[in-house]
Length: 308
Image 1 (cartoon, rainbow, N blue to C red):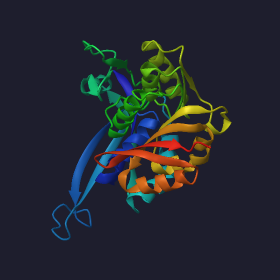
Image 2 (image 1 turned 90 degrees about the horizontal axis):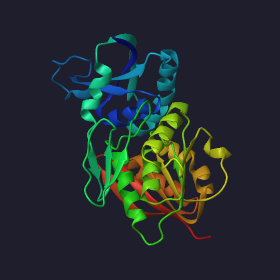
Image 3 (image 1 turned 30 degrees about the vertical axis):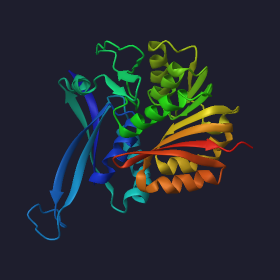
Image 4 (image 1 turned 90 degrees about the vertical axis):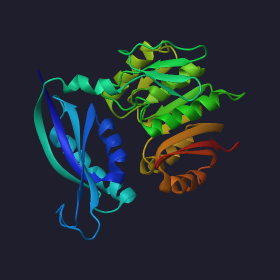
């Protein structure tokens, strides 16, 4: 028997993916969702106007998590959520300490080997997989970090990454911003990059990424770091960032500064309706769109810095 902590919030259905991304980045080990239909006063029987679909999202955390800090982080995130989904797009419901009778292992039942793109396969360490000729198999244990390849934003990044490494002038030096489990940076190393730096603001993610790099045999080419983007120097042939649109725009100057002339960027975590906004802001930094990819409500961009 193990003890855990949880936070429950209420949100609009269209904001669920963004909040899932947020809580995973804060160290959540998994989510539970309770979808309900309510009339304008919270009465399921109210026939007019049409009921609004809301979701109670419960994020589970290890016992060491600080519920006060997590609640504050969520409340600080609400203005960003409101920019994307309108006012009243999220509300705190409750926080709890819970007793676990096996939940911690149940989420693993849903993490199965998954082929993404033409060659890349993502699998957990506890699942066997017989690879086909030419396949590149990434073994990823999420720990307390975000990135298993199951989310649309991660899948699109991996697909664009695979295509980029099949081009004649494949990137050599790669920067992975918000590395999480290290899945994107590790994939880049396995596809042929000579050096990858994965940075993250969460020290647990930095640790998980390093462990995953070792599990995949690329620890000599993949380095994970807690260093902020603003403290880095040097230029990279490829910059990866699977973050929300608002965060990408906040970091746009730092991202551009780390791009060598002609460098590529793969940016994701972008709601499709905000894609034009991200493109416009990055264009001001001399970065142009090469390709746009969309999956459900999310988009990813393959971009390139001008040769100057």
